[in-house]
Amino acid sequence: MFRSSRNARTLFLLALCAGAAYSQPFIFYRGIVNSASFAPQGLPNGAIARGSLFSIFGRSLGPAQGTSYSAYPLGTTLQGVSVSVCQNGACVQAFPQYVSAGVVNAIMPSNAPLGQVSIRVFFNGQGGYYASATVVAASFSVFAANSGGFGPGIIQNFTPESVTLNSSTAAAKPGQTVILWGTGLGAGLNADNLAPQVGDLPVAVEIWVGGKKVTVKRYSGRSPSYAGVDVVIFDLPADTPAGCYVPIQVRVGEQVGGQTVSNSVSIAVSADGGPCSDPFNPLSQVFRKGGKLGLVMANRVNATQLIDGVDREETVEFALGTFRRENGGPFAYNALASLPPPGACTVHTVPGDFLTGSVIPAFKASGGELNAGTSISLGNLQVPGPVLPDFLYYSGTLAGTPAGFRRLNGPVSVLNSPMTLRVPGGADVVAFTADLPAAPSIQWTNRNQGNAVDRETGFRVDWEGGDAPGGVVLVAGISTDTATNASAVFVCTAPSGSKTFSVPSYIVQALPPSSERPLLGLRPGYAMVGFLPLSAGGAGSTSGLDAVLALVTSWSARAVYY
Image 1 (tube, helix red, strand yellow):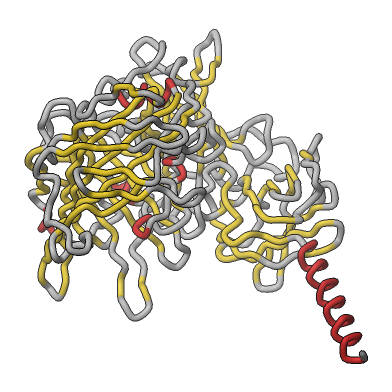
Image 2 (image 1 turned 90 degrees about the horizontal axis):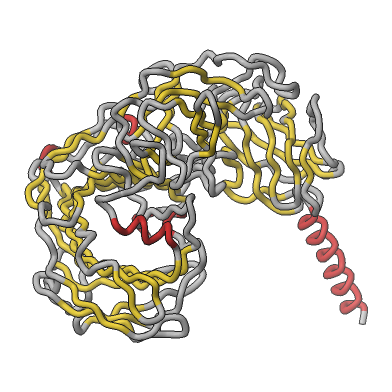
């Protein structure tokens, strides 16, 4: 009896302690990010700039009902929430702008210590655990229309008569002045808690639009209305390429090695300022229209990797399939379909290891996944279906060389010949079949130039093949910071008919440098060139789906160290 009572008291005390711990403000792992880009910590643009807006994600951070500040001057406490930024025992107070149980948005004080800091949230006098972040002088990020840090940016088309929000139905014209909204240009000209003082901030700013460098920058400083928010005003270059997803990158910093490149967002550009179009890419219109879509890709990747001083080659063939509902609209964006125009590059960030299966947020369906059956088949090979909610795609290895990660006891290749795609159907998709052609031909001809990519200079890719009608050549790269489990992926669209493409430094700088793995040395990334036959398979329709596209792609790749 005594022992039972003592155990009961112990359990009761543990429950009280657990309840108290759960009620403390708790910041999620890697839960402190720039409020515009949400770039994961560990990436080159994953730090928080002085004077910028940053977001803290967690639980029990503040009141259940979200609250924003209502007037200047801002206080260091809002609805009982305060945020301390500490280094070596000394702390400064951030300025909360929005507080709720799940997220706190605040201004990083302009006098915050540079380097690694510890951040702690207090709510009604109760402090949570410390979480780490890195503070830098400047690291600019652009707000996006989807509030996710990618896709169409918050950009205004400016004329003397009007200011309109840029979108696929209200594009900008080459040479036009535009206003780009973001945060992270650095410390302000006056106190962070006061209405911002207008004026250019003392930081070097470089801008590229669709691969063309901006030569007319009119302003780069605080917004006159919102503390912590910056605007960059500039003229689009006269030779800006037209398209619905023309990428914009902004690089800030004074010298090589101390510069950071923003997240990539896109702007819609057309010759007359009317609706944009992507004539090279019919798939983009399908996603903007929205509806129930199906996309199946059979892929061949031939890669080399330097092992023991010898280039070793392997080939793997695999399939990816997705059936989804897309919401469409003038701000629709998906990394599967929203390719940059020829000659331009974009960058996506991944809060995980892309090489081990983490999904780019810009890949996810805007309206949810559709059930097309437990598996699909290519020829006589089965491709397992997704396990929701984390695994979103039908995915499976089809074939490969002995050195590759091939299907057990499987063939060396199945994509040398045409085959039939069979989708059995499920709750949302009716059964259908589609014919797939053989894999196209493409070969990276200067692949033996070395296994190191200088992030400060970029690199060049030459190739043969990839010239079948109705397709595009893509140049891409992947790098992961293993310590923080964060990745970045760049994708460039080569000009039609070209056989060479130079990836510029400001694109490669957005990738993390290759990181050390304990006992194993450097973790390589990849660079590659591939052919995407967008017209193959046809963007047609079938029962239960508004559009279906079935493709076979080929890639020539190399393991590299960034």
